[in-house]
Image (cartoon, rainbow, N blue to C red; front, top):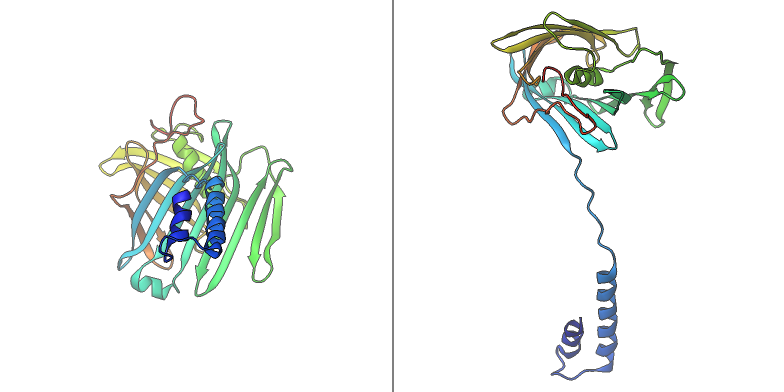
Length: 283
């Protein structure tokens, strides 16, 4: 610090120190010392990413019509966040008005399962924005739907009582299935859980098939919330570690839609730090 001040004092003065520069040098030294004494701002630790699945989606005559991604990350303290994002590409992006669909669930691990806390459905299309947020208030025993309104933010639209039987959104059902929290995923087994009862009561039904060349085939019946709440069936192929390698369904607008996992994907191990023993589905 002294050498820094001396450099300022003597610069351009032929080695002589002027009173004016002496004052400036002292101030500069004090400022530098102050910065050095300030505690360093700790960078926020990166959120541990437990899973990152990337898919190429083909629809009817469009090859590579969209890209989709599923991620699971830890928020700390037993809380987790799952997200599914789907974005059309190329000509389909233009036709769809650059549509972007994002589904997100915040969960907490307790009682050997991932309990949903907040589930969001977000859509951007042709400059318009839509957001639905389902809030699980277990203390009050209520499930509430809050919907975004331009210029007003989120306003409550609907609510119902939370019963003793757990209610799952599609993402929390997906990860609880892979955890084995919905029951053992044995060949020929049919697992049923209660979905979000809006706008109509919903039951998510999972039929577990037998292993084959493409993996273990699982048929899931649920409401397709991305397309006007159509009732649909999704066929998913899981590998031996219960990572979803491919899936296909039929959508009224596009016909058959197929998603294939890309090589850069990083599947989840099926375990959570809070799990004492055992592992996820089929592990």
